[in-house]
Image (cartoon, rainbow, N blue to C red; front, side, top):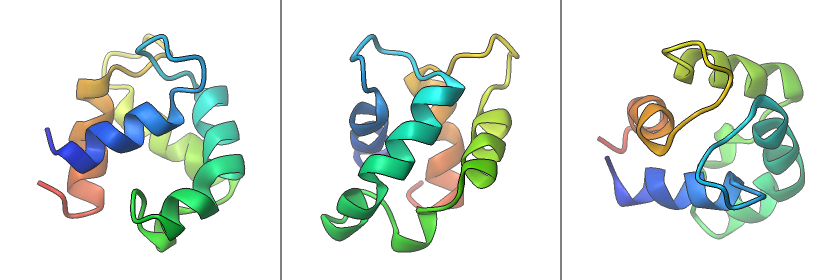
Length: 84
């Protein structure tokens, strides 16, 4: 698990409960994505629309429980963004 992946997870965890929901990922990327990209926490090309954010969530939700743990999330973003 990369530090960048963990930092992105924490930035997207709007309610700070240690889990990400689909809505949380979509809302956080829409509202915080540009500033996260500007600060280097998220690659600029990682700021996408709601459909792409939802697809990212689906890919990461390996056990199908409709929430992402930091481990599930970072496994996907580390690969996708080349952080692993």
